[in-house]
Image (cartoon, rainbow, N blue to C red; front, side, top):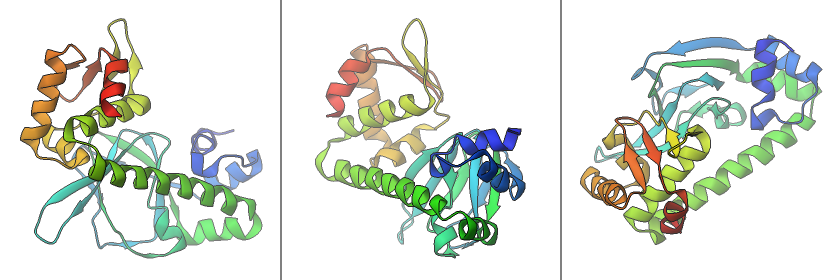
Length: 227
């Protein structure tokens, strides 16, 4: 496999394809790079392609009518952005912004449709992956209704650690690259309330804050608090 083939083979949406199918996808992909803070696309922009993150992190956000911002997801290497517009081309429903330097591959809508026409099994894999993402979205909505802010903060830290964390002698180091305001938007609470939760976790010895990173010192207690 080539470099692009290897990246595509690690994307859950394309799991189970043959090497020939990976090669077909890779042959139709382009590449792009973003600096931290650079916007990939804005809410309402026309959507005609899918992006595969190879390095860095992207945040997906939404702005309400009254100007309030919410952070819907943080995506990293191997994850995809804009998959819904491949099946239903139209305006983007979120704004995608780099929270660190980012490298990506891109695949146009028409190119993927051509591949689906000759590889119908790929559509099944895509539907399964989309269903899994919808399930995670439903869980997040449930948390907003039934979990308190400290519980949501604990769960967000655990999720970030599962996807971006590295085990060290002292705990799990998580370079999430988020500001305090962005972390607050991710859990759907005010910055002040989230900071109080983080300070409480620090005082209990569960975490250590390190700028735009955190080290989880007691994963078990965080997991119990997240329930």
